[in-house]
Length: 117
Length: 115
Image (cartoon, rainbow over all chains, first blue to last red; front, side):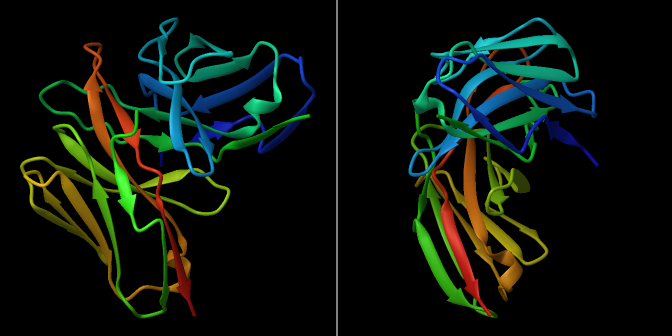
């Protein structure tokens, strides 16, 4: 079974702190994703990565950065946490798909509920 | 940008009844997927239906896809209390060119199955 793990289930930080959220997958997936989930807004894509050291902005990248130094690990960084970044953060991974045969099922971690005070 | 929109937003049924959730989307797709999320947890993939398929079954799940109406439905038959969760549809909205599709998720239908 695919396993995606996230470093913390719950995290409380203060405004202005630098926050690291870690995600690790054990299935040798090429693709990794970071989403945030808020009530009434659903899942929104923050950043994704198709390969080591490669990153692409999603729909809401402002205030975030990412790092992918190893294939199995994808980190989300909040450079200076703000209260509006209080949210549930979900990491996901998937296999590399081809245009002709897209099988882009994503496998999710359990989520990190971040509270910024 | 929101591609899939589920309807209803919330659904409450008795155990043993069938539950039907709908998803509408705006642009052409290659696949549509349904995911389930238990409260406070990550999403779990349930079923994928390709754009050239009209219906697909998996256990108690039945998914239909109507590309002409840009809509899909998820039917859970003989529901159980353990089916209580939020259900999301996801569409592949763009091909990056680097080998993957981004998925765009709807806001979900919250299903409550009362024992």
